Length: 401
Image (cartoon, rainbow, N blue to C red):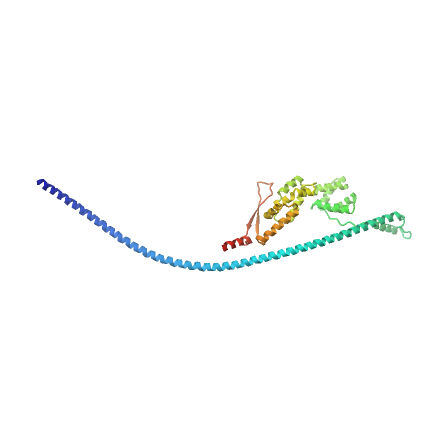
């Protein structure tokens, strides 16, 4: 019993200690509960404030959204009106352009018909002139034969008179001699200054000399009379044997004022020739034909046309690449065919893609590293203010979709 009492006392002491600890824990829990309660109240207050702010902002956003929607609808209505007006103006422009193209096509057809009629009239005139020329040649031949017969049959003193004096006899004799000359007088020859090309000038001179049957002495005299400036100075500095021989003088003048480059050099230039900016579609093939003539000297023209040297150089150096490609696919045999194919392709492109050609700025870039290459790069920079018909068509399609 005593031990039980002792145990009871010890247990009671322990219970009192535990109860004190529990009370302390409860006090701490109460403190934490109070703090948590205050924090909860603070959070609720903040939450209420944020909700009021959010509701205010929401109302503002709704008002702004309604205003933006109104502005969007008004701007869309204005844009639709402007778009319809632009569409109508574009359609009118397209119609006017097509009308102009059709008018120009009709005018070109009329011009072609007029040129055909003129060509027929020229053929008729040529045939008439040919008949007149043959008639004149027959008359001239008849006159020559009659004059020859009269000279053979007439006595020597038939044109002399005894009643007049010596001066009058000489005058009559000169008149008879002048009347005995046959054929028309030679035309006035062109002057050669040494600045133009020698070959076309000499071809004309040689043609006139053959027509009027000049001798080498007459050719030499007339040629010296036609020389001026550089050509006359060059002739005066030659030897006397050269000045008195027509053939040698022509050879020296051809070497000095004729083609300066060798044929193989001209053939290499023909491979790299390009159309310049200011050169038309008709002038460029003429220049190529001239180079081909000088590059293939002593070669028949049909052989040069067969190997298509000038045609290939023309299509390769043409600035209109699309038209040149179209003409190359047609495999033209002559330069005239290639030029007609290129012109036809350019005309078709103008009709289909728009008649007004866009303004183009051409900027040339020369390569300083390669001095032998004459080819330049051409950059095409389109102006933003003047759009082409193709760009307008693309914009129309995008806006329509």
